[in-house]
Amino acid sequence: MTLEQIFKYVNYISVKENTGSTLQPQQRNTILEASNISMFNRKVAEAQAYAFANKIGFSEATQSILALREFHVKENITFTAGVFDITTLTNSYAYWGSMVALFNGAYRQIELLTDHDLTVRRSNLISKQLSDYPAATLFGNSLTVYPSNVATAEFFFLKNPIKPVYDYYLNTYQVEVYLVPAATHVLTSGETGSSGETAGTTVTSTTVELEWGTLWHEEFCLEILKRVGINIKDEQLRQYIKEAEGLQK
Image (cartoon, rainbow, N blue to C red; front, side):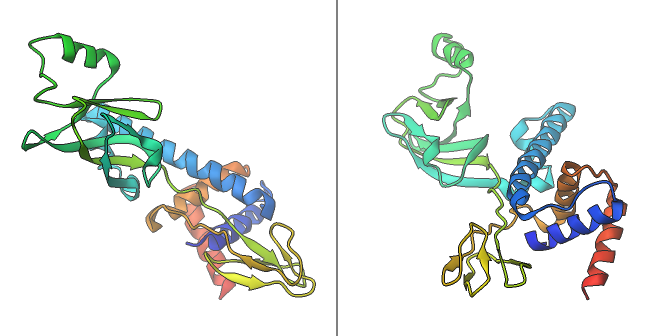
């Protein structure tokens, strides 16, 4: 679904349920961001629960939560004196997956350690030695690898979902017109852009569609509906969507 379709369904259901209010344009981006973060956190919590129940690592568990597969990424990184700033990643870092580096002529998995575990590794002679089995710590935005002569690595991690944005303009009848991503429109007399632009201005869409896979769009609708005071079950949502689609034909 596009964001336009999602909000058409949400507003249609709000009217049908008569327990919530339709969302005004200025409310949409705020509720989109909140719903996006909430749904991501809930899926991460599902992965944590799955990991605990099955006695597996969190990274492995995230692979079993299908909705999160959209957010698994890999980037090649370069350390400077053993340190890497995660804010320079192309994707916004959320959770550790795994890391592999070519070290002393062989590929080694770099384990993420707490400060306590790192201290044990460095001081306990019977622990795996860092000179043979590199490790890393992450404090704030600084990812530090031990030993510091590890130069590059392949970093697999869970990224944050991109923030969705809904953009539009009002036509001469003050009817909202959705702007698809990257679209441009020259405002004519009586038209107004979403940021108050007036006639003669060329507006460029700031719309960013959902990054969630299509299978999860109905669940995203439910997330928004909860925020306008409506709690319905999946089956009822699907029925409403069918009704709304029928009215649009």
